[in-house]
Amino acid sequence: MTVASRWWWRPGWTPGRSFYDWQVTPTQPVADKLVEIFAPTIARLPGLEQVDAARLRIGVQGIGFVDGVKGVH
Image (cartoon, rainbow, N blue to C red; front, top):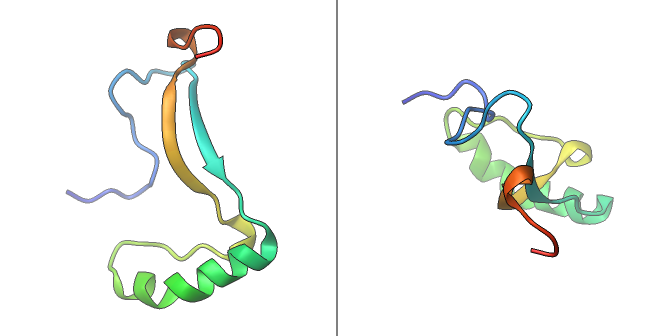
């Protein structure tokens, strides 16, 4: 399977339906170091795109669809 974009439809997703998730946005010195550490490995993996430190975002966990998460959950 080839994925041309990191965005694709997942089960339950439809236009206009929002999803809660966690995104880590490291401070610039941390982002610079992460890029430095991982860039050589990512460069060797076909199909992966390098991301510069200023645009680095790390998605770590989906919580659920907005219409399915109630109250303080």
